Image (cartoon, rainbow, N blue to C red; front, side):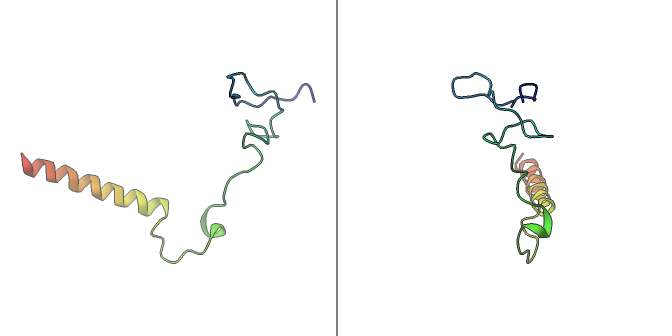
Length: 76
């Protein structure tokens, strides 16, 4: 137990956390090492249209940037 890898988080006082890290993770159970996060894809809810998928959000951002670029050129 003493030889276990320690958590990489910092406490409020700025000192490193002394808790052992969860296996194959960098953080302890208190600082988020226990949860791998929400599942990706269809395992995380009922998708109807894909409007909020990463690809769709990225594409909408690209289109907005493209429109902004051409709008700025037109104003010149």
